[in-house]
Image (cartoon, rainbow over all chains, first blue to last red; front, side, top):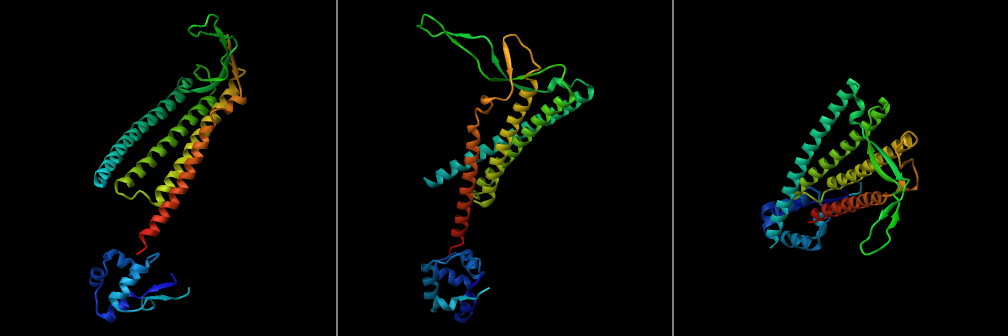
Length: 68
Length: 214
């Protein structure tokens, strides 16, 4: 898929675990795992907003476009 | 309230699954016995006993239609009724034709019941709206159409073959005619089932996308 989710890079930078992020954002571990593995079909703006708020970053820090 | 509905739904699915599994077992036993008996009767030369050949017939005479309160009885004619004949002397080819038709229909019905069981098993695990079930519904619709067509072909061939070979006082045996195409509206229902299956598939895809929307 051309859209890459760099969640683990941001988590490493902020020294946060996926479990911690899940608790702070309010998304289940399984959903975050789907997002992290790039299996998600779509992301809601509200979810993106919550993740960016917790990780103190921009959407572009998490999402990257890489043409196939 | 929602939990109560879910429990009732689960119980209904369980009950239907048990019923269809029982039907599957009974039907399979019936089919196996039928094949065994037909094979034995073909081998022993007593082949016609278990052949069923559909025919289309009409009465040559008119009958009386008696309505209460009406003085003079009206008359009626019987057109293109269907029935099944059995006879002691059939050619081996005719017998095999009849038996193969019955076996094919039974196999299709068994497959339909098996597909229904698979759909109900998926319903039990709350995995109902998936593409696999849509494909199963599509296969069910195609099998229903096949059963219908085999039945009609058997009727057409049998009635055409026997039309000039049967004699019965007051009865005319007909071959293929306009009335042979009666009751074809059922095929529209089976085609509609194909449409439902396609809608189901699209629904399953939408659900999958929704499930993968974070």
